[in-house]
Image 1 (tube, rainbow, N blue to C red):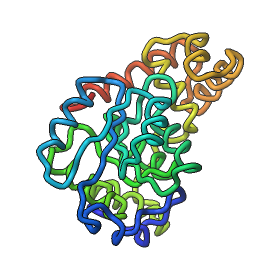
Image 2: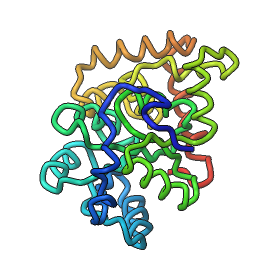
Image 3: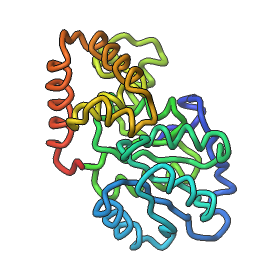
Amino acid sequence: MTLTTADLPTPGAPAAHPNRSPAALGRKARILLVDDHPIVRQGLALMLAGETDIEVVGQAKDVPEAADMVDRLAPDLLVVDLSLSGLSGLDLVKELKGKHAALPVLILSMHDETVQAERALRAGARGYVMKQEATGTILTAVRQVLAGHIYLSDRMSSKLLGKLAGNAASGAASPIERLSDREFQVFTLIGQGIGPRAIAEKLGLSVKTVEAHRENIKAKLGLGSGNELIRYAMQYLMDQTAVPGGR
């Protein structure tokens, strides 16, 4: 399902004007892929290579490389994985809001959209698609975001529109939704078996700050110990990767 910015107002980068879209200008849309798994990037590039109105102009493995390529290659759209090594896909979206505010970003992720899509839109992304979706759905999302629309699945659109309408029956919040963006990033790294010191190095934080995030995460998830947190985080990531077609 497609939502226009009028249907679902969200903070972040303004949508590209449809009249200025690559198709309207008579050229191919220039796509930059950002994913820390080379096989995933190559698979997406191969899928998009068969489209006459799209070309992949670059592939980046992390946020610094993606930011550099945006400056050099001037893409029309970024297709970004939520989970990257070091800084996350959300960090990239937030970084682009300054210098490249009009550049749309489509999140393509293994993480459950009911938990992460709203977080991505708040950061400034223009769409969210789960990796197990059919090729046709991903291509539709790419073209709709290029046209200046927001793209979400029917299920996610109904959930967010229900929240906007004040519909309490639109679904109870997952405990994971209580985490801030940084807390969620720390949470996923914990689930990968990474310790506080290594997390601090990856994210450019102090160990003390990481430990504070761990304590906040435990409180928000109702967990009593560090071992419970590790088990919970590992199980969460296992559940995500067990989805057919997930990362």
